[in-house]
Length: 117
Image (cartoon, rainbow, N blue to C red; front, side, top):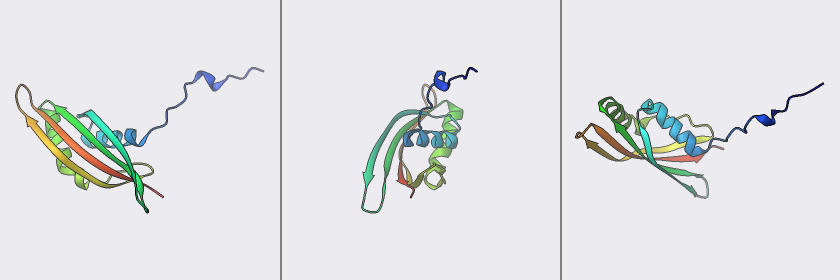
């Protein structure tokens, strides 16, 4: 009897909290934005541990800019569902609009995540 080995399959990459943050934001903006930069900084206090995520997103084209404007309005109050994490704060830090040569919106945002448990 010959058994097939699962070694031919590549191991599934474990999703990081940064991956989960980008996915949650993509769900909020419908994939119309592109992440230009994403930094993550760990922090801890006596009672909490977590990460601070700073992202810069760009929305290019009239439809994408409209979606980006919705993100700017909704992000601070949005209820995120990130496994193992609680979003303690979500803030828009900076917004830059440009109309020429094509509509473009650049959004700098920051999310503070706390580890559940």
